[in-house]
Image (cartoon, rainbow, N blue to C red; front, side):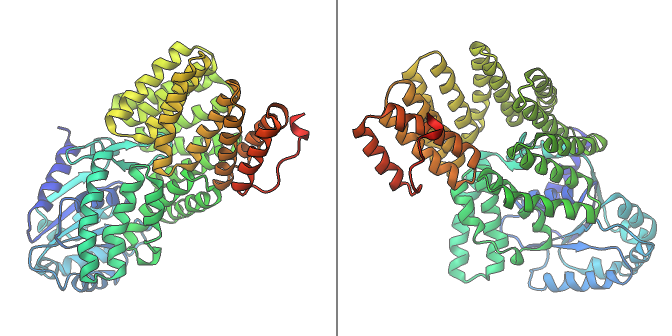
Length: 521
């Protein structure tokens, strides 16, 4: 076991017991502290806990002590845990005065009858030891968790380690996400019956349920839960996670303007706090938005800026995500050799770090490269590697993407029955999870598939479903591509009887007047 894993295990053991104690943990970023707080909350069961931010400026020590007393005044002795998190504000010359005041108040802090855990960035950790040495002496457990790899690959309780190869955010495993939803739903029922205040419900139940739904790619449920979490009801320590999850949801729903706004918030907060790790993630997200808008030059620029920070911080997971997405940009430019190079560079890191989910995503993209080169045997090999991991991890959304691609390979081989089976297997998952944009892509493929087989009416109906879904998810470029396919079906292939049925289908979908024949001629 590495030193960081050992320190994490010591920290988890410390909160599992109801004790009165002072503990300090040195962390490298505010985001790291927040990840640890979130992880520790799962160890507390129903015991009370709260979080406050610590700003090391003159006069703040007394305010922090008063706030700590107030927020914990209803706790039974020894039962709760208070997390005090360094806010990451750039320090001024008054920071030593703050710690001298904290030292003078050490008896008051020690008298608080619960477990207090300080999460401090290196500068404040040093000042604690130098200017508040007596307070530090009363902290028997001094831990150091300053790197991502060992800490967030630790999975004893099912907390996942990986950073998504696409979105660059940490998630729960599907197994733990399902367990968390089941437990929280049961507890929520009791809380609603007891009349728990709205802001407590948002923080304690709806927010972690939202996180679990996103980890399962259950977009329908995630949207419903998001509506129950007013941002004003969240504590400061929850805001960054809230912005991350909202970005992910809107990105997956293809609401790019909204997703961009969340990424901008994260970027501005990172600038304000000097949090370089968060800045790298925000830049990565902006790259995703630019890539979806097909502004490949801008996307590449964002990814390279993110990569530079990740490499400077030694954040290999972050670097692997950037390499992967630089590969997607090269792939969209049809520079398959360069794309393959980026993907394999990403894959090498993921395999070494044991990042199975990230590896599955990169295997999938390598399959697409091979497919574009019409090497279907190699493509199928990559897809099946990806699928094996997705199915093992319970990643239904990832599996659905691979089922779709296996359908395309079967179609290329003119194994039509097998192709249709793969497409419908993919579609069933996308529809159940509420992934309308993913479903739209499969509707589109089924429309082309029907046309290839001479099933004109089927082709037109699938095309209409695809157009409606792409329009709903605000993807006009793809919608227009499918409209062009529909023109061919309607004006060049369909009989008069089929045209009447397809016209009715179009009108029922609420798509307005039929497109004219011009583009299809």
